[in-house]
Image 1: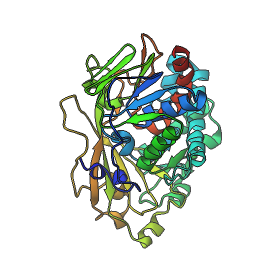
Image 2: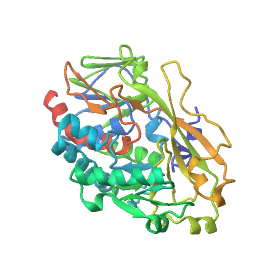
Image 3: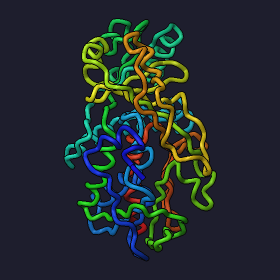
Image 4: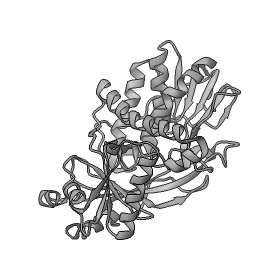
Length: 393
């Protein structure tokens, strides 16, 4: 398989993507992690930091970053998949506010680790601007800000923008206003996940690629090459989880389509704005998200084009060449921009609609359900999972 062809991001990493050696036979570990995406590698990282003596093994069917971690919208955002009001209704206002603060802190924590580990992933903390291009969208923007205030967020956490302020950040057409939050970074997701894999290896973690796990049992991960036995097995397989025995309904795998445009001319960028590389979206009911990497093309994650996939679905890799990201419709000057690459990823959505982390029981623990926010949610949950996992080893 030519992994570089799976996504724009994987095609622009500074390495050949040669698979690491597969598992060579039966082995023992203190913790075995199934899946080398953000969820699995952040878990390995914080476990290794907390206890350098732990024997940690990561098993990956393809290569680190093969799944949604290597082909997504390029955001690290504090926006939680579940709204503040929904969190407050279930867990109370204080818990909802703590969750939001934890997400904000996690964005800063990812930036700290990126700097400390020397991971070159084009990290820039420019925030997110969400445009309102109709009165209905402007009403949603006002409601979002009112909800944020009502649930205890600071005024600077989510700012209501008038038309001039929104246009100054992102000069789209027919802008009525919008919102801005500073708690989001643009990044190169494949470079992050690949750099994270190297970082955990430097800390003694073993990664075996091209090693498909065919079953997860209490205290064991089974592969065609052998079984890795450990007191704790962490399932970090996200949208690929239904392919495991007994896990068909554990999460709902979804296709999330991304389009990368051709590079845009400098004069076009001068009109568009996004001087701080803000990520951006709009207040449509079903919107797309986008980011603008240093290379000068759009990277648009088509959230409106998510579809349910299943265990028998084709690999999440191909899409429609020549399609145009929805975001370019905000500018007449971009109306003829075509998609140079269109690829999809398969994140996993928990069927309850809530992401979560299971406690280690009977020798294994599931972590699942981060669609759209894996770069932050998976990171933030990892250090909180670490004490539970270490208590079992």
